[in-house]
Image (tube, rainbow, N blue to C red; front, side, top):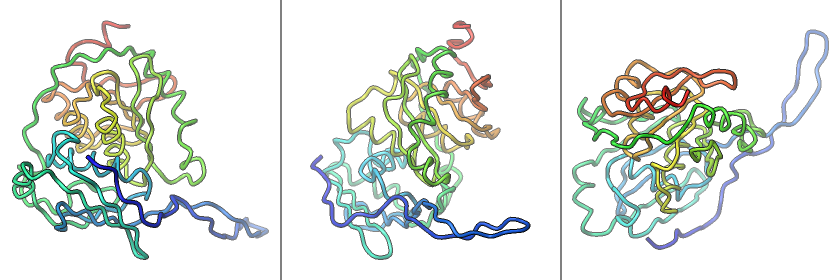
Length: 276
């Protein structure tokens, strides 16, 4: 896959003025606000989706999104990625190797997706809840490692530190050391970016776990399974469907992860229980 073409860039955050009001006073101030832009995603020059996202790490997002959409199974399926920044949004054109174009025909859709939505535009339940191949890898992770990552995560959330408005997705080594963090206004976008980073760098997804600063919705468990990441931990609660998918797919699922406790919702290989 050749390198992306860069035109002009967009800032992930911009300064804005405000007035702070208290019961008996007011004063002007300035604050960085997270940028949220529409990204028109194309495959082979044909419109596919419009997603709202943070305009950073777009090449990682493109690869992770293509995998999550089940259009590619490897970065080698992609010939190149072209990024175009305009006055009203960003264009991301993902060019596939010719032998993989048929998969695009089978998965084509046209959507406008909000930053909190992962299934807008899907037309059948089968598309939203596809059959997933169960994970056959036991995570080599202890609960102590999850606490290490939780304690370290905030120091990696640079954009959120400035804006207080974006999610983070991290990939961590079995000992809890964070080796990659991606941020975005959309939790699923942030996770796609981390997945794309793993694929582009040739990192083994079974060699660690994912930690997300969000609730655990069903599409996040799907993304973890598709990326073959054996353990997913989220800071907020899971939905019932997310737990159901984790159990069906043998995904180890930890949620409501705090620095003093975590809730273990699925442990198919008894790896975390045995580590206690």
